[in-house]
Length: 201
Image (tube, rainbow, N blue to C red):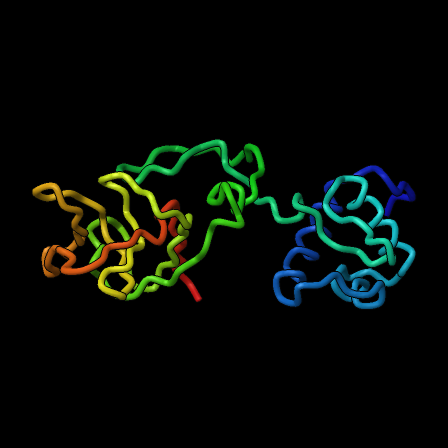
């Protein structure tokens, strides 16, 4: 262990990963004593030096009362330089590109964004599956072709906005479901801007 408090080194990247995993489970940065266990080291002074370097690197910071908390960079995830092919396999490089925060990729206006669980398979041909989480920007205006969360006759639904004979309709993306032609009111709650899917529990 180096005595430097400011030089972030490859070993610190391992400590950061362990701290990120702990935080994912417990939503807090623990005491120095607990961090000795998390990091697999025996000295609290070493823990302090590690946290100081992580702070200098921009991953954590202190609150006015001295508690350690994560910064936005703490939640950044590596983005590979190579894309993955969905067709025939091609060679890929293992080098990492830039880091990004998932929240920043999906959400432009946090105060106007909500996450809504998807139930049913009426939009499956649009790649939206039962159990997905829809990232929805709340607004009452949408364009034809947008996938929207709409309130139709006092019921919520996720469909594609379309027009038919001058009237707005909602199209499913599954031939087993009928087009929705509102008999009463049609109100746009929001527009789909992203989708979250977890494949492994």
